[in-house]
Amino acid sequence: MAKWGEGDPRWIVEERADATNVNNWHWTERDVTGWSTDKLKELLLGLRVEGPEGSCEVTDVPKLDGEASINNRKGKLIYFYEWNVKATWTGTSKTGIKYKGNIEVPNLSDENDMDDLDISVSLCKDEPNTTLTELMKKEGAKKVRAALGSYVDHLKSEFTQGMILPTANGVASKPQPSQTQTKVKVDKTQIGSCVSAPSPSTGVKIPTCKFSLKETFLTSPDELYRTFINQDMVQAFTHTAAVVDGDKGGKFQLLEGSVNGEFLELVPDEKIVMKWRFKTWPCEHYATITLNMKDRGNETELKVECKGVPTVEEDRTKEGWKRHYFEAIKQTFGFGARLY
Image 1 (cartoon, rainbow, N blue to C red):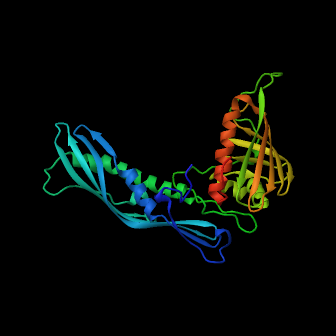
Image 2: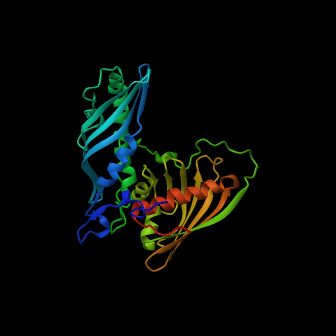
Image 3: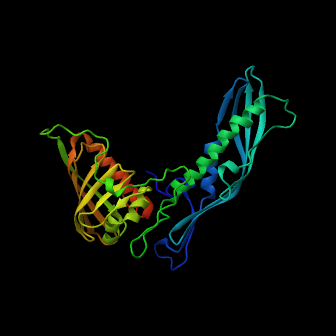
């Protein structure tokens, strides 16, 4: 998986912070103009609509004037972007006649909603009139508006990695959700309840397995420990609402209810033992997950021991921990390190 600043020039960013900006809490800025230019072209080029008259396609994006940046100010992400977008479309009639036209969006900005964008569609000078222009104005403009909305969503998800870091007391702010994300309300009374999986017949044993995973994080044991038991930090790296009671016997639910469980043993900065389950597992079946943290100087080694995982769920559980815990934590808090 590509890391920021490694190989791909689109990920090179300008980052500024004052000298007293511990953990990026007070003020951090990323210039994402170059990335935005590439992303806008990627989303617009090839957009195509068809109708009884023929088809139209965006064939070029010759001009993108503007800038974009992301600011982390006192733990809150603020997005700034302002663009004048000019694109070229090519229409082909059912008889094979080709036409060329222009698209202009002068006000793609954080100050305007997608519905307020001015999308101008026209034919190039000296081109004969064609009904394809109306097709592009109606259906083509809809697709252009959707593509620009997708750019904003990508800006608020892909490019916020590393912008949120824990504060001195371990509490982190999470990125503001994009407009297309669904807000999740979690009812504490439902934590631990069975959702969709049928319960096996009484006396039927579920074949289970055990395995362990090892990962290294560029942070201290106490910060990594808080990442798993602090509700704000869990919501930050999962990017969804969560309920986490970080005490012994406390319950948790995250990833829109896909995962829930209970903390069985907590040894601050060293060890967490929990019962843990996917909601699709047989009702009331939990695995036992033990997290052991060891200080390795300027990094922390985490060993995850999993017991009681349904055998058919072994691969899914491994990949889930790597993706939704290890990688997500590193990307969100900047604890990036090598993968084992």
